[in-house]
Length: 380
Image 1 (tube, rainbow, N blue to C red):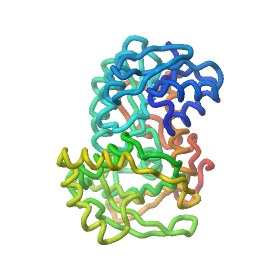
Image 2 (cartoon, one colour; image 1 turned 30 degrees about the vertical axis):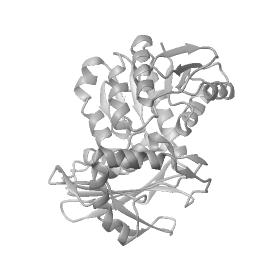
Image 3 (cartoon, rainbow, N blue to C red; image 1 turned 60 degrees about the vertical axis):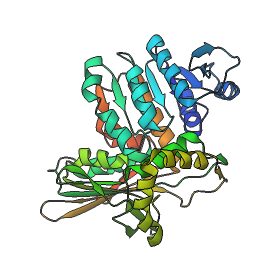
Image 4 (cartoon, rainbow, N blue to C red; image 1 turned 135 degrees about the vertical axis):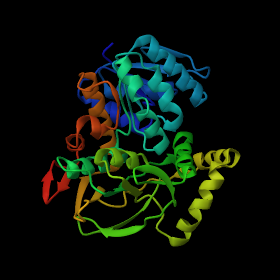
């Protein structure tokens, strides 16, 4: 089967990815638990994409149009995994978090020849999927994790700065996503991803080893190429692992503009992480957070930015940037581009971050502009 399946197709990311692939006339199957939403999306896209509705028991049924059901997300994912193994699509795009839970189940359900893409940026999810490399090579599958602004943006700058050079001594990456809020509830998947990410606590690479670090440490304020200013602080993101692998540097810090700037808040975050790691408390926070309503809002700045700063063994410092538009738009373009390339058999067996598989030009293809050594590549 040459179709690309999109899990969570009626969500914001799933819809955007499906729209881009439909414009490229890629055969699609839309998968989710909202029958009416799937029908509406299929009608909007045109081209008669198939839909698969996952029912409360976790079973899946395909139809040209009809009723579906809603149920527990984990059972739905299990049902979807069973369907993958039976129908063997060309590519599966997983947009459902928390990826620490969904990615291993879906990726392992992909039979030989079926490739996998997700949008993970949780450190355990990214390292977990990359740990499946040998398994994927043996089965002839290509697994790509972090196919979005998170991971790809900073990874691409590191790859561009380090190309053809010895491994640097130190690397710092900063992700500054500009996101336009859509109204509605935060939702269980996103709430779980947020809580689980904080519960991990801080991490960094020291002497080539992943070690604990202060959550929201390494705080910096700095100027952007457009002369505006930003701040960031470190956290346990998939960008940390991607930057370490892309550079080979023994000392790596990954920071995000999403971390709080206030000194008082940053001071209590480590203790908060300990509390959230206690499962009963963490689950209670997830439930409350999932019910929070987000109001519509414009993005905080015109562009999303990713920065990498590389320090060589001789003390020389180099810096580069990726400029992109709205971060979720970039994510949708990146994931669609990766899925389309895998469907055309342009990948190779194994488990990868997107830049490691396709190089920094992937970020340009997704709409970004690389600013390295005073030169710009691409448009956004």
